[in-house]
Length: 272
Image 1 (tube, rainbow, N blue to C red):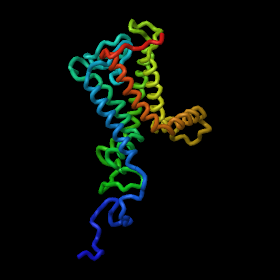
Image 2 (tube, rainbow, N blue to C red):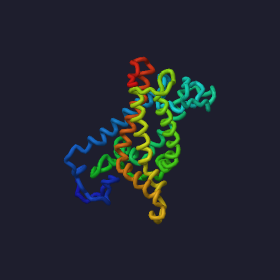
Image 3 (spheres, rainbow, N blue to C red):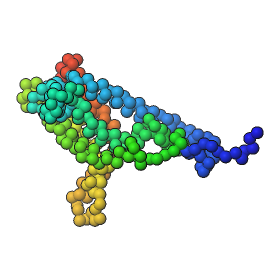
């Protein structure tokens, strides 16, 4: 018969050294909605981007090239007149050329401080929400493999910058018509403009970018230019979560728009 003095055998947040709270949590709101919505949104993007990355088709509709496939680095790329189509990899690469470039923006987002919080909570319930007990029996943080690789986020930031520059070039080329003459503006041009603005806003709002600009400065007064840049990036950083989601949606929309044009679903509406 239990006497109530037996040692507790559970571990983690319900271990013997923690406060003995019988309830799983003390929240009365629908706290599970946020992590569930986060997991659903990220899962939807993962499924869509995986399909498009391996499709190896319908990624170019003059003058638009999908951001998932730019720059195109394989010999099996669809010819893109005037676009960033560099045959760095020879004919031995037979898979989708998107797999050669997506690793850089994917690594940048995967190691992003906000996205870490999002998928830790959404997929691993670590923790599921504020003031809700973590179900795991132990916690090692990002000190062991593979999570210790999260510390290379700043290097993925360096890799994401040239990708953003190339996508800016693609946006400039979107002002050409199907005969590659300048002066065109269609619905796709606006889609690409919105996308590149959000891509740059998200990239520059990165915590690593903020540290690179203003970190390790003892006296801001001696570096007025860097201080102003640090302030501007800091304002973007306040909206890092919003920009992370907005740019994730915009890059998927831009790719899907090119897919619709390339597959013949409709023609690009022109403004002039």
